[in-house]
Image 1 (cartoon, rainbow, N blue to C red):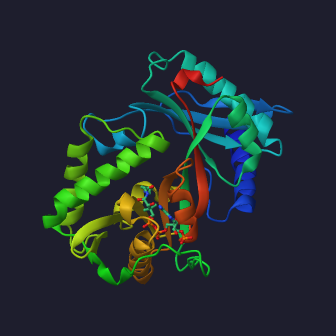
Image 2 (image 1 turned 90 degrees about the vertical axis):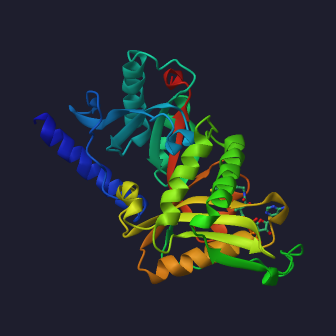
Image 3 (image 1 turned 180 degrees about the vertical axis):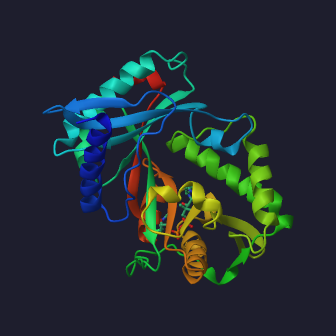
Length: 325
Ligand SMILES: CC(C)(COP(=O)(O)OP(=O)(O)OC[C@H]1O[C@@H](n2cnc3c(N)ncnc32)[C@H](O)[C@@H]1OP(=O)(O)O)[C@@H](O)C(=O)NCCC(=O)NCCS
């Protein structure tokens, strides 16, 4: 068999496993990185796994730089199974050898990144063994999924939501949206790989100006007696096209920013913002909403779960990139 046929067999096996594990997963992508295709052979002579390593460098001053290392080496793995742990382990070893030869992968602001299907748990042992840590989850909410309401007595500290108004943000709110967005980056930086950089505030302001200049932006503010206390900002399907290939469902919307002032948390402001957004997204025909949240974020993980989201992908990282074992 030629390599192309081996690759097709590998893709078919990986597709079957993914479909069985999670119907929201897309078909696995063929390796298309900037380096050579990395291959782990399997018995007898076939392919156990294949992948490619994309070398990504953040554009100076871009908002994307706030969400992780400046230089990211991203592996797109495709593993046949049934022994997923072994196939992935051998592919990760090939990747480690590749990264050892790439200049600069020992610098602190670099990361080796793998985004692995959350429910394909056969890969977890190999990822851990190679020194990668789970940092973020890409969570998905299929349209119309109901929220889990708090049980009686669970919301003893809730203050009246009557004084809270949710309204669409406009260009005049640019300062507020930038400030609340920056607070989210600062919170995230304590519990994930997010980093506030020199250009982060300016980048946020520039991006937010673009969102707010559009017609009926999907950016909402929560105000208590006229004072902004919360923010939710999301991308409609055309703008979220960059993340759409990560799921089989469509059209895809993406939640970019969510923040509630510390003194206002736990009173239902976040749930009110999410309700507002979901109502509009569902009505406009969105099939699934995606978002990132830190694995270690003690507030957002349970919050989004209550709002109908569940893990689709988990991002695993080693920093610096050469730290992968
Ligand atoms: C995640 C976040 C937006 C939720 O907003 P919120 O207004 O606290 O949300 P809600 O009050 O609707 O729900 C929070 C839940 O935590 C509970 N809670 C209780 N006390 C709380 C407190 N002091 N702080 C936070 N949550 C508390 C709430 O009761 C509620 O649980 P429930 O659904 O079982 O009732 C907010 O915690 C936040 O801004 N976190 C920091 C930034 C962040 O993590 N952003 C999300 C990035 S993906």
